[in-house]
Length: 244
Image 1 (tube, helix red, strand yellow):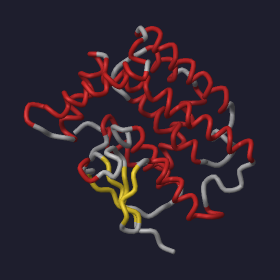
Image 2: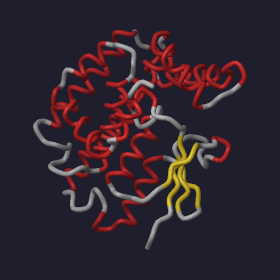
Image 3: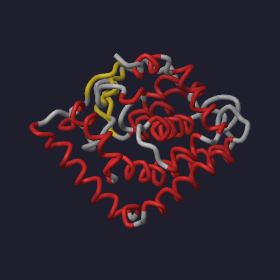
């Protein structure tokens, strides 16, 4: 059965990354590694089935949430699925690592981009270009919403140093788990690698120096992992990152 898939996400490759959103980067990484034929179009938040990005049109039906999309594609792929053949233990490790990144490390990145003035100075122009509005109104509203989200979730209640420390501990854990393997669960990419790549790329290429960025960049195995996926599945990113 041929799957017709359209990926909806903000246009552009800011800072030479797949996308401004790590969840969009994650899903596009999965589609490329899993060799799922797809078309990419600009997102319309008014049509997003869960009110967020990314979302897809899958055989004509809109589906929201990057992981729910991946779960369905994995189910359809059968023995061609990225996670096919994983032991129950490795599947559990992949699940736990992915959830740590998406439900923990994510908020560290959110803080760096949206809450700090230095990070916002880099994020705002990209957001205004991706979602234009009079006087950058949408960007300002989005920043206010995300700062409230950070406070409600708890990360925004910590000091800058404490937040950096939490992120550093996450990348220490990822570096230890990866070890000298090419991918997190062995010699071939799995679903967890799509998440790990997307968030690591977002940390390393964000143009705002932080202790977290320096620490992650000092983990040679994580950098090699990032480069391995980027070089093989995103060769177009280097062109996107080049100055005009």
